[in-house]
Length: 260
Image 1 (cartoon, rainbow, N blue to C red):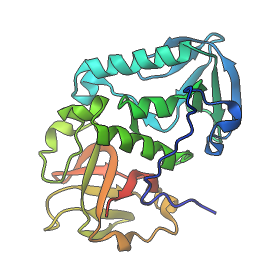
Image 2 (image 1 turned 90 degrees about the vertical axis):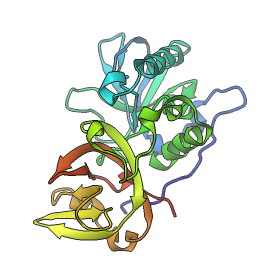
Image 3 (image 1 turned 30 degrees about the vertical axis):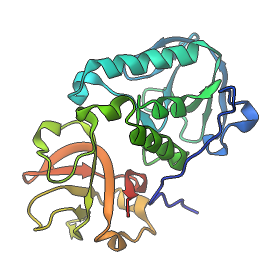
Image 4 (image 1 turned 60 degrees about the vertical axis):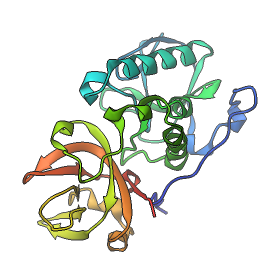
């Protein structure tokens, strides 16, 4: 049965009093052990972990700050990488995964553990944002909970204007090409050609459009999008432009959070 990720906001407290997450306490959503004891020799700019045997691991479900590419201070990107280096130097890294286990660059896509759950540590300190891909939705509820805690506390990137949550009233043009969280009340759900449009405007001409392509519509099978009309939602993704309006492409229900 396909999981429905609408309205995810669950907290997941699995770290023990010593800050260690033993293997038998690691979340079942993380999947099976793919890499048992990895030694990390380098943390790349995008957070990719390079192993001593030449392989690479990607932390699934999170997006680290990227500095200039985010139109944001470089300091947070440096802090995120430094935190990840510290976390992965303290203990061998275990990578757990569910299929598909590798990306197109043959990097292993994992939930990482090195004493702590790496995704949790980064999100709780405000050194990453949740970014769920349509073919790997594992642990989405837990990751959203960790991010929400950091946002409420104003930690890390959440204290920076560059990473504030946008609304459809913001000037979106400076955000083109960047990953953003945007929230507002959904005005209508319409169809154009084979795409489904979630229109956040009040007049059908301005404001945010969230677009589900025909190819991605199958990922939303069983999701009643019409029931979201009138609800305040938060969506996330890369801001693009279509017909003079900001657009975020939705490829997974996990990109949508119901706020009321």
